[in-house]
Length: 314
Ligand code: HEC
Image (cartoon, rainbow, N blue to C red; front, side):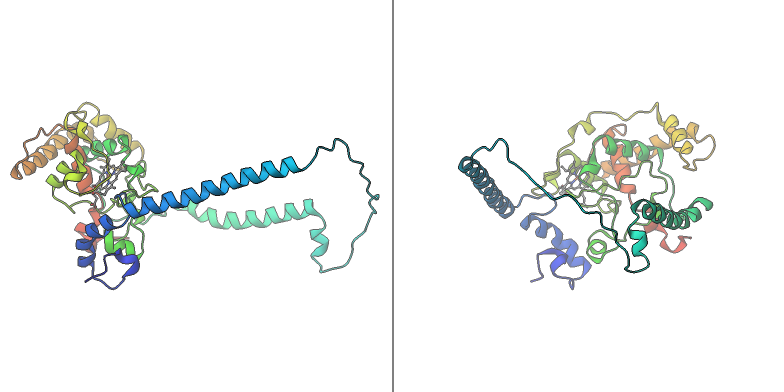
């Protein structure tokens, strides 16, 4: 039987096996937000030890204090300091005996290093290799992204696959700097209570996200992810999309001049397409609901370089 303990321990199983086994693996182990009984027992045991230790310490301090007696004034005497002149040593010892001069010289040395590092990056326009196939978000995806930010999804999910085997085998191709050029702000995140989402686009059908966001346990047994039922009642804004496009352009996203006027139509068209796709899977829904925008965003994530890896340019 393949090792169920995920790839940290078994590096030789193929990617397929890992993907198929992932769910089994995490539900057995206390990882990534799935409940794991053993973890909680161990944590309780560790915590108990910690508390016993603290109580012993308090008891010890009290006993020690009680054993002594208060001494208000103690006579103290010390011999006068002799003035010593130190000489000799290596040549640089002379410098080390002059802390102020030494600090100034050290600062100058560090500044030279800093200048050498920084000046080149000021002189070039961008040091992020752009990837030709990476395009700005569509209006609907922008709305979805803002919902993602509003709901704080990035407090549990990172969007940054690191270039390590145990990450790329689980999530896919590692993230490139050029893939984030249109992300304002970045949503890299720093905590993985749930899995990384940078390559989640097109991993599941739209219907999967539809069910998952409504009740994560419906698709992922034992999931600890919260439910987001209000996304199925609330509508994303149709009014502000033009302003969002201009705001993004101010930040350097190359939307065409005048795209503001086209954005609403494009947004509705994409939403209708997703709703139609959901209908094929027997889900009747309103294309103006927030969940539709969120699905659009999630399905886009990390897909730009999947499409045309070969045409990616420096
Ligand atoms: C409290 C932490 C938490 C928050 C907040 C959270 N999630 Fe999750 N998420 C999880 C966990 C744990 C899983 C793994 C179990 C599962 O599939 O539900 C997960 C799984 C997922 C998956 C499936 C990933 C995969 O590759 O299988 C997606 C997509 C997702 N979350 C999207 C979101 C979105 C969008 C939000 C914000 C609206 C969000 N999550 C908020 C914890 C969280």
